[in-house]
Image (cartoon, rainbow, N blue to C red):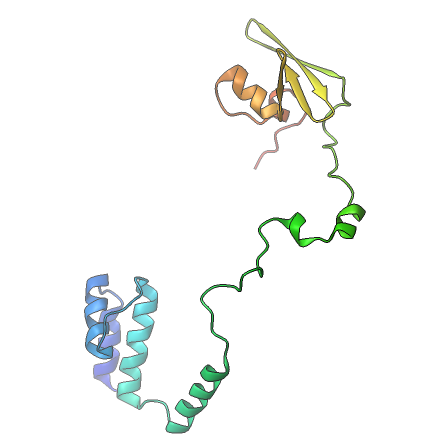
Amino acid sequence: MDQRALSAIDTLETATMADLRNKYRELFGEASKSSNKQFLFRRIAFRLQANAEGDLSERARRRALEIANDADLRTRAPRGFVVQDANRALSNTEQSRRSPPQRDWRLPAPGTLITRRLHDRHIVVKVLEKGFEFESRRYRSLSAIAREVTGTRWNGLLFFGLAVRRDA
């Protein structure tokens, strides 16, 4: 590769986004749709190298066009390809074969009372089949109760001493 192309590529490495956009417009004759600095750098460097060394052969260009014409290009996945709700993807027979979600092994059996003393307050939580009861209100998680009591976010299992904090 000639020295001018090498020095031009070297100066691109420290160029600002505005400089890269201007150089792109100069080389390609249109504004870049990308705002990714690394992408612009690579496209411009490729074009400078192609100008210095010679571009693709006519045979390579034709083959690339053939491949592109055969490709089913999409910007989004076809409707129904990505399933938002996993249960909708399963048939009724598959759903009936699936076991219900397992209960967290760290939780005590339903009906158990979990207690915790915080400052001068005695906190008593009843474990239900689905959820928890605290001060005659139902909660979906121990974390919600810990947040209600302290006013800050807590891991409910840690707050009530049902789990031990792992050190990183």
